[in-house]
Image (cartoon, rainbow, N blue to C red; front, side, top):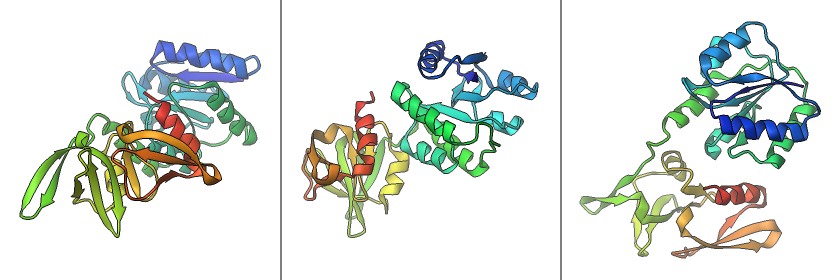
Length: 256
C-alpha cells in the first residue's frame, strides 16, 4: 500500500509511521508534506497514492482548502484533536478519522473499515459539511467564557467556570453552580450551549444533561452496560451514559 502523510508535526509523523508499519504489510510511504501548497502541487502532478492521512491544521492553514484546489479520488483518513461535533460531520460524509494522540486499536479499526469498501473510490467532500467543520475549527480558542443570566429586572454576569452542569427540564435550560444555586439560562436548548462551550471541558451526557468534567466525582457501571455518573453538586435525576456512547465517553475522560 502506497501511503501519503500530510502532517506538519514531525513527532506525529513518526508515531503514525510506526503504527502503520505494525498494521500494514510492507507499506510504501510516498513522503511527508506539511503544507497546503505542496499538497496541491503533489496531487495535481498525477501522483496517486492508495491512502492519504491528512491533518486538519497545517503550517499554512486548514487542510480542507486542498479539496477546493484539486480533485482527490483517494480514501482519506483525517487526524484531528477536535470534538464530537466534527466527528459526526466526518461520519455523515463517510470520511475516516483518528483522534490525536492516535492509538493503535483506533487506527486498526479505521484500516479495517477501508478494507471493507472499494480500495479506490471517488472522494468528493460535501461543501456544506466542510464549512461546518471549518467554522468549528476556526472557533477553537474562542469558546464562550461568560454568560449574562437574567434575574428579575437585571442581568448577572456568570463565568463558565462557575457552572458544574447544565440541564433541560420542561423546556427550560438551567445551569447549576458549584454552590448549588440554580440559574435559568437565556439559551433555549442544550444544543446551543454545546456549540459554544469548550468540548474538552463540557460533555453532552444525554438529552437532558451537559456536564463539566470537573463535576464528575465517580463513574459506576449500570444496568444494560450503561454508565452512571455521580456528580457534585448532585442533580435530582440520575445522569446516565448510554451503552452506545460509553466507549466514547471513556475516551473523552482519558484525554488531557
